[in-house]
Image (cartoon, rainbow, N blue to C red; front, side):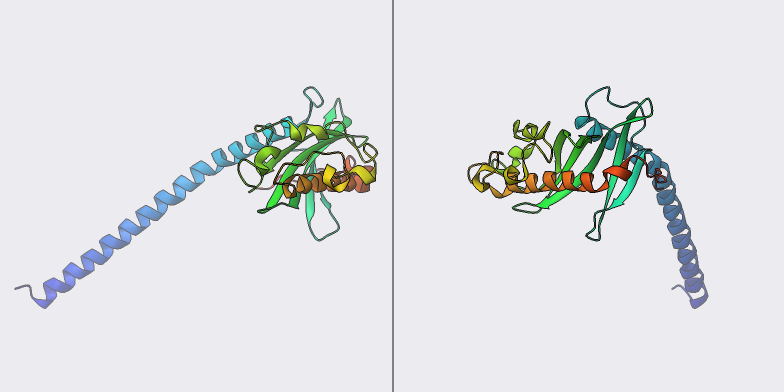
Length: 211
C-alpha cells in the first residue's frame, strides 16, 4: 500500500503538472488571439470598404474613406459615423448608416449622398425580415432599393416620401408593407440628418482610428 508520504508527493506532483498545463494553454490562447487580431481587423476594414463602394459611383473619390471619417450627434442620444468621399481634395459625397424598425427588427441601411444631398446609392446591410417577402429590400433579390438613386428632400417632395399605400411614390410589397416603409423612413431620416449637418460634415476633423 502507498504510505502517506508517497501519497502527498504524488498529489503535489499532479498539482504542479496541472498548473504547468494551465499556463501553457493560457499562453497558447493569448498568442493565437494576438496573432489573429490584425487579420480580423483587416478583414473587417475590407468588408466596410466593399460596402462603401456599393453606394458610391466608381471614380468619385481618391481618398481613404476609412481614415476620413467623423462622428456626428443625431440629436436622439445616438451618433452616426460619416465617411467622406473626396476627389483631389474636393468633397464629393458622404456615406453613413441609418436604421428603422421593420417587421422583425431593425433594418439597417448604408446610404451615400453627394454634396448637394442627392442620393448616390442605398443598400440594406442588415435585417431580419421574412424570407420571400420582406427580403426584397436586398439588391440581390430585386431592384426595389435602386428606386432611391437620385432622390433628395426635394425629389420627391415631403408629402410623397413614403410607400404608395401612404400616398408616397415608393412601391410596397404584397403582404409586407412594414418592411419597405421602414426602409423609406430610414432613408428619409438619413437625408434629414445630412441636411442638418451639411455645413460641418466635410469640415470636421477626422476622428482617430479606433484600436
